[in-house]
Image (tube, rainbow, N blue to C red):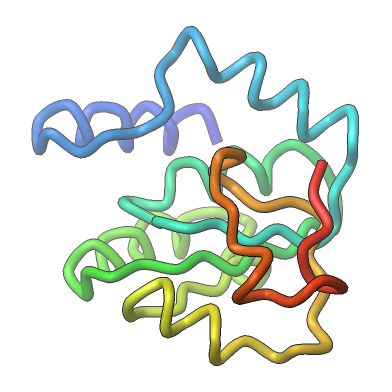
Length: 131
């Protein structure tokens, strides 16, 4: 995975794609390791860096990630497909607000990334559990 993360970091820098900063990665990984979420909802896939970082933090983590840009989603999928987590990460293409409304109301997420998002009203009370 180190080689893939390095490849993604170089791609992000070259193409001006925002990914989690190096100084924040340890904190981010520590949060995932501490709380051990099994179902993660990510708002904004970009190139899939954070999704792969989260998936790499534990066993059996399933991630649903929402991305507006078809182009970015395709790039993210190409990176994800190179990883051992290709079956654990699902990209949903479209507007996040609309995508949230189309999620299965029975689907429960343990963690919502980015942690600053507040989609309780779209997800419903039972579906808004967070770390």
